[in-house]
Each structure stands twice: as structure tokens, then as C-alpha cells.
Image: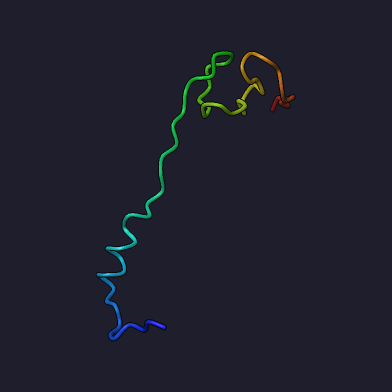
Length: 60
């Protein structure tokens, strides 16, 4: 089994983990209500998907 010869420094570890940054997800305006929603997902504001009411959203 491979074992590291020396302890990896904080700089090396952090440089390697720098590419694991979170990705900003794309959003579009919902055609029904105009709220931002992810593509191919049900709108959380109005509950519609492709013009069909899928969820019932309670008014606050």
C-alpha cells in the first residue's frame, strides 16, 4: 500500500482542494409567474411545470 513519505503542506492541500468550489446553478424566469427557477424543474413559486399545475403552493 502506498504511504506518503512526507506530510503534505497546507498550501499543497488547499491548492488541490481549490478546484472543489461550488457551482452556481443556472436559472431561468418561470414563464407562468416570472420567478427564477431551474430549467427542467418545477417552479417553487407557482408549482407549474411546462404549463401544467403539478404542485399546490400555499400562499404565505
